[in-house]
Length: 261
Image (cartoon, rainbow, N blue to C red):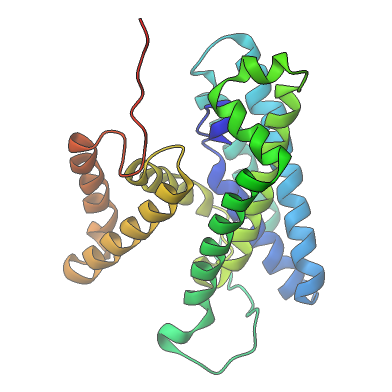
C-alpha cells in the first residue's frame, strides 16, 4: 500500500482483525471446513482493502492535502471496529484450531503458523515484485507515478489493486494468527501500532526490513514482558523505538531520502 500511495493507512491492522473474526465465525459458529472458510476470508479482505482505497485514500489524494489521509483512514478503521463490535460482540473469542495436533509448548501450531505465514508472504511478495508485470508496475509507481501514467497505465487502478491485495494478505494473516490473538474487535489498532513500530525499525518501504523489524520488535517485547512484566511491555518497546530512530532515522533497511533543490 505504501509503495503505491505513500500513505501509511491507520486501518492496516483492521484487515487482520476482520480476517480473524470472519474466520472464527465461519469455522466456529457455522462449522465450515478450512478450505471453505479461507477463500471467504481472503475475498472479504480483498473487498475491504479496495473499499479503503476508494473511500479513504483516493478522495484525499485528489484533494491535494498530504496529511488528510490520517483522519480518513482512522475514520474508516473506527467505523469498521465499531461495526464489528456490534455484530461480533466486545468480548474476545477463541479461534478454532486449523490443524489437528497433540503438541504443546513451542510446537503448538498457534506459534509456528504465524511465523511460517510471515516468511511465505515475504517470499511471495518478493517474487511478485520481481517476476510479474503487475509487481513491476507497483515498483515503478513507488519510484515515479508520473512516468507510469505517461506509459498509459492507470495509477489509480494500480493503487486500488495494491490495496485490495494488501487487504487480502492482511485478512489471511489474521486468519493464520487467530489462535494466538483471538477474535477480538479492538485488535486492529494494536496491530496497526505494532506494525508501524516494526516498519520504523526495519525501514519503511522495505519488505525485508518489515520482516526483520517485526522479529526484532517481537523479541524485544517478549524479553521485556519476561523481565519486567507485561505492564511495561509496550512502554519499553516504544522507548526502544525512539532510541533506535534517534541514531538510525531511516531504519535498519530503509533508504535515505535525498531532497533535490
